[in-house]
Amino acid sequence: MKRCENLKSKLPDCIVSYIFSKLSMKDLVKTSTLSKQWLHEWGFRTDLNFDLQNMFHYNTIQELPKNFPLLQSQFATILDQFMMHYQGAMIHSIRVNFPLGDQHRDVIDKLISKGIAKGAKRIELLFSNETNYTTDFIFEGEPYKFPFTLLSDTYSLTHLHLEKCLLVAPMDFSGFKNLRTLVLHIIDVSQDMFRGLFSNCIHLVDFTLDNCNFISDIQITSSTLFHLNIVNCGISIQERKKIDISAPNLSSFQYSSCIDCQVHPIKIEAHMLSKFSFTGGEIFRIFKPVGFSGLKNVTTIVLDGLLECLCEFIVPKLFSKCCQLEDVTFKNCRIMYDLTITSRKLRHLKIIDCGYKHLTPDEITVVALNLSSFEYSGYTRELHVKAPRLLKVFWNATKEERYPHHLFGAIPRSRHVQNLAMIMMPSQIANLTKVLVQFQNLQQLELLIEGACDPNMDYFWILDIIMASQHLRKLSLTIRNSHVDGSHRQRREHGKFFHNYLKYVELRGCVCTMDVIELASHLLRNVNSLKQITFSSCDKFYIGAERWTKTSKYCCYDGNLIHEVLKDEVDEQCQLIIL
Image 1: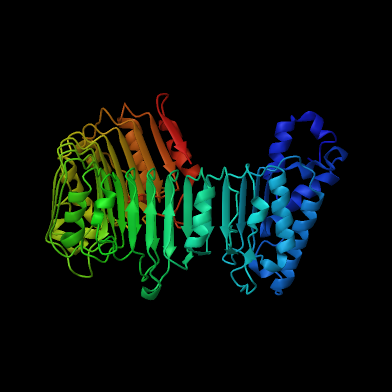
Image 2: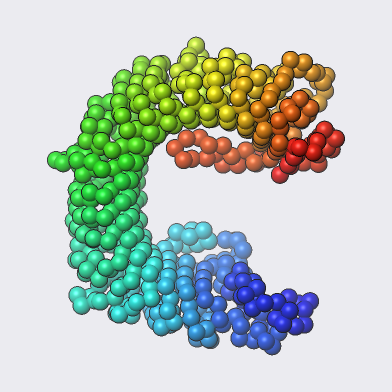
C-alpha cells in the first residue's frame, strides 16, 4: 500500500474492501494516513471484531499491563471512540471478546444500539475472563446486564451469542422475531426466562446452553427448534434440575456433563429426532421411566464416558427401543462382560477405547447384515463380526499388545472390504502380510507405524504388502517417532515385486530417510500404473470416532533431498509431489 500513490484507483473497490476486512482494528485506522481517499474508509467496515489482538499491540501475556482494571478501561475507551467515529451505513456483525462488566454498561449499550440501528445480523458478546490472553487475571466485577429493551422490535438480528452476562427478560419483551441461532455460555438460566424467550423466538432453529447454571427445572418448548446443545454441565447431586424437551421438529440433540459431575434427568418428546449425542456417567437411569422410547426414531447415536455397563443395560434396551439406528458410537464406555450387538439396519459401528480397568470381555459379537463400516480400538480376546456387506474397517492393533498371540486375530475379514486403516507398532509388521492376503478386494490401505523401527529392518516389507493386496489402488503410509537412518545400509532390489493397479501413494511423517526414499524409487521404477506419489511432513492420522492425532514436531524431513534423489526417476505419467 505504501508504494502506491493512487492505489485505490488501481484496484477495484471489492479488492480494497477485502484487504480492509483482513486488517486488525488498530491497523485499519492507520490506513487513513496512507491516502486522503482512505481518510474515512476504515469507518465503513461491516464486520467489527474487538479483542485484545485487534485493539492493542500486545503480542504476549508478558507484555500486558499488570493493572487489569486499567486495561479494561483502555479497552472500553478505544471501543467507544471507534464507534463514535464509525460512519458506515451498515454493520453486518459485532464481536467483543474481552472481559468487560456492568461498569462498562454505557459503552456496550451504545455499541449494541448502533449495531441494531445499522442492521446487524450477528452479535457476539464474550465477556468471560477465560480467554487466551487474560488467563492470569481474575475479573471480579458484576456481570453485564444484557438490555433486552434495546432489542425490542428487532428484525435484522439472526445470531446472538452471550457469554458471562446477566439475563433478566422483561415480561413484555417482543424482540428476536427473526433470531435463528442463540448461544448462552456461562449464564444463569431459569424457566421464567425461557418462557418469554421461546414465545418470541418464532424462527429459532439452533439453541445452545454451554456451561450454564440451571436455577430451576426448565422446559424447552419450540415448534421450530432444529438443533439443541446442552453441554459442559457441571452440577452436583443437590443441583440436579429436570430438563423437559418438547420440540416436534428437533433433528439433533447433544448433551454433555463435565468429568465426575452429575447429569440432569431428561424427558424428550421429539418424534423427528434423528441424531443424539450423550457424554456423561449415566444415561439409562436419567431417562426413567420412559427409557429410550423418546429416541425411537433416532438413526445416529454417540454414547461417551458411560459408567453403566453396556452389556447389562444399555445395548439390549438401545437396540430394542431404537429400531431405526444406522450409526452407533460407543466411546470410553464400560464393557466388563461379553457383548453382543444384533441389528438389521445398522450400517456404521464404532467401539473405541471401551473397557473397565483390567477387566476384558472374552468375546464381542456383532451380527449386522447391512453393516458397511466398522471401527474398533480396545481390548478383547475374541471379536466376531458377521457383516457380509462390510466395506470399510478401522483397526487399532496397538491395543492388542496385551495379547500378543492374538495379534490381528480378531480383525474383521470380509471379501468385500475395500478400505482398511490400521495403527500398528513396528513389532507387528511381520504378521501383517499374512492378514492382508485375506482381503481379496482391498483398494485403499492406510497404515500408521508408531515407534522406532529395528535399525536392521528396511521398508521393503511395504512391497510385500502391496503384492499381497492385488487390487490395491491407494496406499498411505504414516511414520511417527521413527529416527532410523538407513543411509549406510547397502541398497538392494526386490526382484519379485510387481503390481498392475496401484495409482496413488502417500508417504507422511518421518519419511526423509534413505530407506523410505529407496522404497519410493522402487515404486516409481516398477509400478506402471502409478499416477502420483506424495511426500509430506504432516503425520496426522485418523484414530477412530471422528478424531485425529495432532501433528508431531519431531519428524525428520528434507524436501530438497527427496527431490534430488528421485527427480530422474519420475516419468511423464506420474507426478512427484513434495509438501
